[in-house]
Length: 228
Image (cartoon, rainbow, N blue to C red; front, side, top):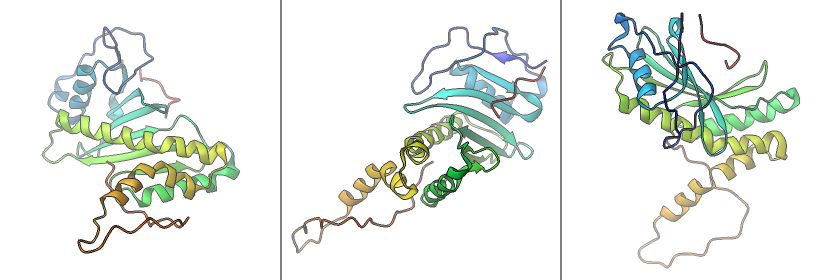
């Protein structure tokens, strides 16, 4: 029987706010799992006092993580014979209106063009949107620091673009405008970091609505239930 793990005193830690689950059972780890990448995921969640559900046959963990803009359903998975660590972060709002899905698809295509790691995906059957990132497990060991860094990067990327996604769905923004606003701070940093010529004064910024081309930059199924 699969068990749901709940830390005894669930708290809000750093960038996490956790909810759901009510069983205080402890997890019986099988001997074959100790030292495996999947066990490393379980240990990470337990060490951070997270509430999570285990799907052992799929080598998958599901948990909810709250950031500034939304509560995300997070799926941590070990696949390909323990060689790949995957994270799926599902957006809580679906593009249910089929007429809006072309705009949503364009929006995420524009976002993906600027990403170096990971990508957004849209299920055109039901409008589900999620962020997906993978990591190759080199020598069969998945370090806790790697797990922490990849989860943090995935959350940061998903949370950056969620308000823009909402503007496309409900605010009437074009995909291009929504992406531009989501990356406005990055565009500002690029402008400020451009060096001026040593033998000429800094020219005034021209008043124009033309936008600079985006630069590629590094950024780094809720209906189911634990198996019994």
